[in-house]
Structure formats: C-alpha cells, structure tokens
Length: 115
Length: 111
Image (cartoon, rainbow over all chains, first blue to last red; front, top):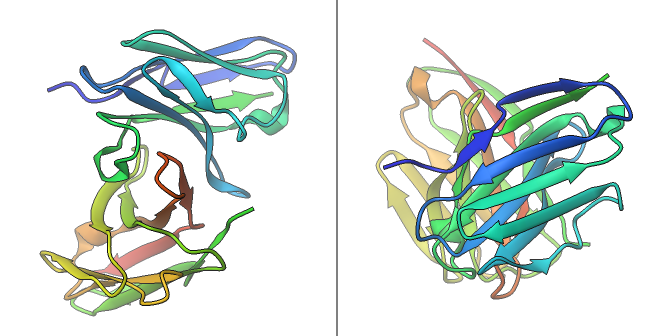
C-alpha cells in the first residue's frame, strides 16, 4: 500500500522565489497535516485539514505561507516569497480521522533549502 | 504555548545496554505518543498511551503515561544497532488532531 507521498523530496531555491510543496495523503484518510522540522524549533505543526477544510492554521508562521487542499487526494504548501530562514524539512501526514493521533502517518518529507 | 521538555538530548551507548528517556510538560495531555525517526524519513509511531498510569510495551520498548498526565517515559531494553535514530515524544492537545512534539533524543548505539 502506498503511504503518504510528498514531492519534491529536495528543493533548492533562491530567496524571493515561490516554492510549492505537494502532498498526496493515504487513500481514505480524511485528515491531513503539514509540519516543519528544524534544528532550532524541532517538529512544529503548521496547519491541518479535515475533509479538505482547514481546521487550525495557527502554526503557519506568516502570511508568506499558505496551504490548500482542493480535493481529498492532494494538498499544497506554498511559500511566497521564500526566505533563507524557511529552510527546513517539511512533512505531510494523514490520518483516517482527526482526533486519532495514533493513526497519523508521516510522509518522507521535503528538504527545502533557500539560498 | 504548550511545550514538551524531552531529555536527554542525546545518548551514546553500548549495544546491549538499556536506555531511558522522558518528557515533561507544564500542561496536561490526554494522549502521549512516542515516535522514532530514521535519517531521511518521517517519524514512525512506536507506542501510544491513553490513560494516566498506563504502562505499555511493544517488543523491547516500554512506555508509561505519568499519573499527573504531564509526563511520560520510554525505555528500550537490550539495545541493538538498528535502534539508532531520533526519538520524539508527543502530546495530543485536547481531543483535536493537534500534536505537540518534544525536541527529540538522538540515540547512537556502539556495536
């Protein structure tokens, strides 16, 4: 069975450029989560969706970050414009139902480097 | 905001030794979880704890949900080289899907 799929796996871009990270959740999972991992701040929840609707975006650092889930099988996290401090590993996770964290599965992550 | 304090930050042990790590919080959590992350991968769930005082095992791993609901520990017995990785604790916020993660414990095992 396919797990959570993220693309690209690695992204190197220059400051000021737009970056789009993509996620395909596990089929049948109704909740989707975006996390960011850095050495300084650890693993942080940015935003999560339930049935394609954003539920809590309080972790999104600033207006340069936006996330969408146009359908049950696809989500994007966009950074525009990107800055060097956005360099991190971004994880997408999905679960069948929202309040069951023990069923939350993580993707392999996208390593973003902003020069 | 809510924070989890995880310790130790790193451990370097000999194969066969037992390992213990813990997490504390100033807030109460309803669910505690322990994850392992291998290099280049996302975290993978090891153990989930749902009740204060609960002690749960998964093979050589044992975890406990503290009585106060503000702490948890993870023990690994008879460590082996494949135990190498970063271990994270996480607490569930209320009955939401939101998880707060500890800073991680990096474990290295010398054969």
